[in-house]
Length: 294
Length: 165
Image 1 (cartoon, rainbow over the protein chains, first blue to last red):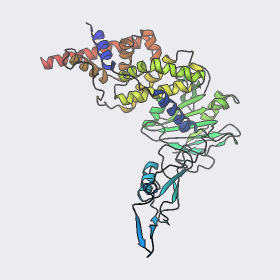
Image 2 (image 1 turned 180 degrees about the vertical axis):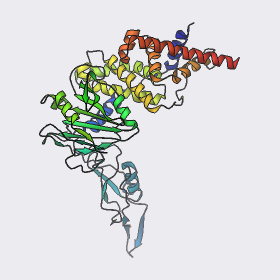
Image 3 (image 1 turned 135 degrees about the horizontal axis):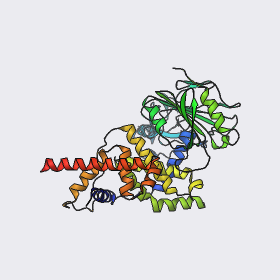
Image 4 (image 1 turned 45 degrees about the vertical axis):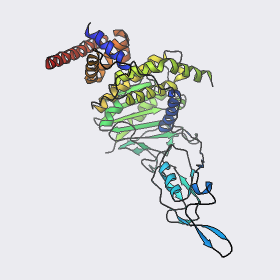
């Protein structure tokens, strides 16, 4: 047998027992939603979800664990102890719910539903003494899906070590930002939109990646129909569809280049907005207007 | 369920195992990584499904997997532990087993692009032209990468034989 046959047999044997998971479809759809939230910041409906926390003592109402019985002379009266609210901010929702349950309080989630996000605020505040069994409102906003990694950026044109000196007329900052988008180095993203569009829509999004992340961003090449253009003396990949993988068809106009050896920038225009403007020439103008400010 | 959704489910039912197998060989890492890779690729397929469903979605998914596996392996540059155990139905005393394990081990040690060439050529049985198209390189590069990959594996196997003799 040749080494090719040996290798083919070895590969076949190696994966012969592998089967895709039966729930792959729902996993992929869930990831799709997560992706939409992460990169496009889709306008997820605000939900207020009350977590059905089965309080042990409420189920076992007659004999709750932390009660004291006081003799009144005629009858037994059940008195529940008051509880000091613990500080659960900064903890994961599941931990916070458990911690509240442990002291006999009920967690109520408000804000956007995020799977096991972090608690941003709680009400009443830690240290408050409340009646046993009281509801504590926990808010996850704004951990996601509208992340605010960089805080208030003002007009949003300066972030992640770059400044945008040009944007198509009429766009405003999308009022969100995210870091750690790609690779192991530092990376940031934010977007710009037409005023009044539904929350979560973007018109132009920019990703900046530094150091090792710069290579990760720059070397990931799903674009089709790439045209190399010059941006400040460096080659940039300009594509009608930077989101396409192997498929064709215009969708998300994208430009990516290295602003410096250690800084890569990617700018893309949403498919909807691209129909209203000349996507490729606007991309070039935006790219040419981006300056490093480090 | 819409027609698109139903068609996507059918695509998953028929093609996902094959995609996962390719990904496992391709990424040379843990099964967990391979599954993540496949989910990543299928999410992109799903995103663009109305556009690509009649235009060979499997090739699209495979291309995403190949590209992501290569860039991910380059990004990490860490030899991952071999976590994927041998298939349970393989008899433990099979005489071929050592050879197979060694071959797979050598395959993992190759640079990601070279490994991708070997997987596409000898596992998927793709032509040199198809492999080149999927990797976005020339046919000549596929030929030379395949030859060098096989030579490296053969060399390591010979060394292993010398040592155990």
